[in-house]
Image 1: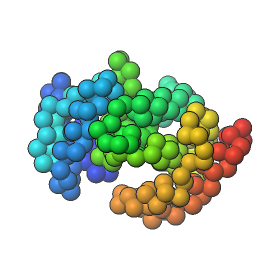
Image 2: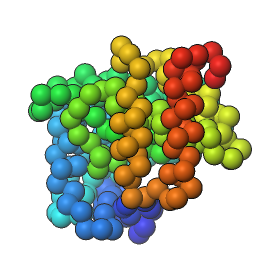
Image 3: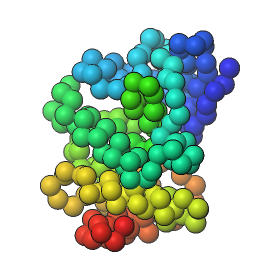
Image 4: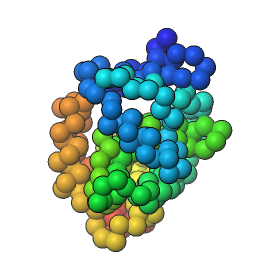
Length: 215
């Protein structure tokens, strides 16, 4: 039974304990599975992987709403949501990495966090790679900023969450926004309007970095 669909994959319930995530383009899920198994082995909150075969990944079924759904329902404030994201980024970047650089998620936003009775869990590790943690913070900030500059009712909430996220970042300097924008622009799932707003989103992040109180 189909229980979820994203920009690149569909999720099917196998039973009460397990789900199957399948990439629509046939992309191999082995890298994602290996990343999740490594993180789980170090206590980071990710779904347990049971098996992987080509584009199909079988993993533990999580119970609870996404952080995005909780935000839209008003059960979590934008500031609290940003604090959860910041904590997950901090924790991720301290996990021992099999590469010379820390592991990054590079797409950590409220839609990729599940609020379970055991606490927040991070899903969708397709974009994971080793690198500079500052880029991970920049990607999360940019995604929030894209919502903040969009004419939607929750844009002000996204801006407030963005200001909180930036206040909790510990990158030791300005975020690499040019690199984040370039990476974001390559996302094949963005439409033309979303790409057109990237410049405004970058400008908002830069402004709030300089003057966080304005958020």
